[in-house]
Length: 582
Image 1 (cartoon, rainbow, N blue to C red):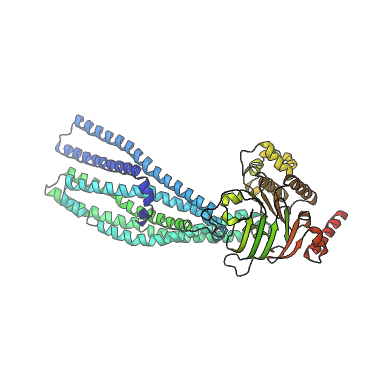
Image 2: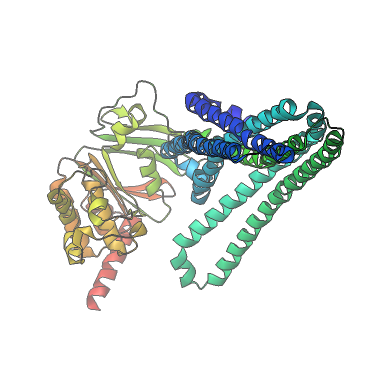
């Protein structure tokens, strides 16, 4: 029953609605007592020969009135109780999703996407059943059980009632023993489902790679293993759950046997009538549902408790990126001073960045080059406040970026990462993602700046073309240019292109860079690239190697050095000439 304590905040919030639903359930339970009694009376009237057509119609009319009343009242409690359950699911889902949006990279590295999806679907379904089916079964069990037992005592015979309920304590004992085992097994089953969810999500996203390497058979085998594990864990749950019904059936059977033995003796002794006995047997039949509901109730409560524990574990996770008290919400703009002595990723012993120092004036462009894994993206992650645990300071406009609110900082930054993520909607909606109210003219202006406008017009549906999941229908270069247009649409004070031109040809790259230089004359740009042509126009270029700056200067100055930059430039120039010959 601990799950009700955990959800006490919700039951208190919806107290009035639940009270109405529960009271309605009790009224329905009281009405349920009338038909068995009417049947008993009719049986006695038949036995004594006093039943008339008029009295029969009266009893039938009363039964019809009870049925109609129950129909209306059941509608009321269903709307109240199940409506509240849906409301709980909505509230927790919103809280969970809001929590996801506030978490940092460490959180999403710790929890896989499929696992988070399982929490937001399967676990929430478990909570909904507690707030709906759980409350229903408790209220229904108590209302039907109490009213039926009272009717058995006062309408029929208290001695017969006492004998009939003698086996009931065994139900509580069995439920307690089995309930404890259910909780731990449900947690294991739900964890297995999360792993399967991870597997399916990963396989679907990587289906092209799987097919390219001919790993379909191996992937299916791995999927089957995960599925078998889920089935195995759920079977462990079902083995315990399946013990409830036989135990309850046995207890009910004992009640019937004892009632028939004692009831038959009372009828023989003329202490109760045959009609009373028929009424009593009907009342025992009415007790079958409350007793069966106990087994289902423990199933629902233990599943819900395990689900709530898993959700709570997620909700207790805290982001390391926290706005300080009194952080300014003014727009971050001005010169950038970057001075990081050292930064290590969590749980890493090797520094990802060391002694990174540069000053970037407002309106200037900084080029960042280096081998793969040199630290270019890491440099940007600190600037975007994806991590705050570094030794040093990064300032914009003379103020530490950690003293800005996240909105004050990030709304001034347009970041285009290496992995271009497009949403499964139209090209137009992807470009104006940050501002859905922008006009078509403004969308097209951004598309022209990134040399994607003509490509879009060549599509059958133009700007209304649906790009598919993650932009699957577009080429790599098209995705990159749409992503850059999306970043430009907000007119950012700082534009960061993280190897975002790698999939476009040299001519298109030159057109994009020329357009950016013209449009962003008073705004700051940082470009990371493998191609030297992408950064050669920058006011300063830094060369990174293993997280350190090993070269710096303008394009001309770096060519005078006999270093990595010069070697890479000459190599790329040779490649261009060879391609030209071909």
